[in-house]
Image (cartoon, rainbow, N blue to C red; front, side, top):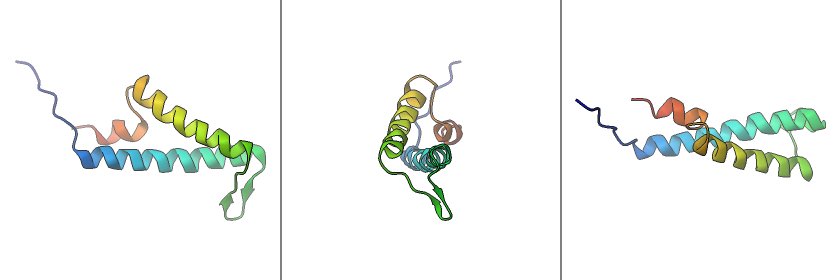
Length: 81
């Protein structure tokens, strides 16, 4: 008997994308802010090159996670049945 792969619900895909973005934005933003001295009392403030590095990190996270690593962190968590 073969196991049928069930499609993932749309709400799980949307929630995974939102949680992935928030995770990499705040985690990566704080890490880049810490390394560049842009951490403030309220969090982090990235301008110029550090902000561009964060945007590149977000893109690389989604591309590498989806294409090469078998899913992003939240996709792996939420797509389980």
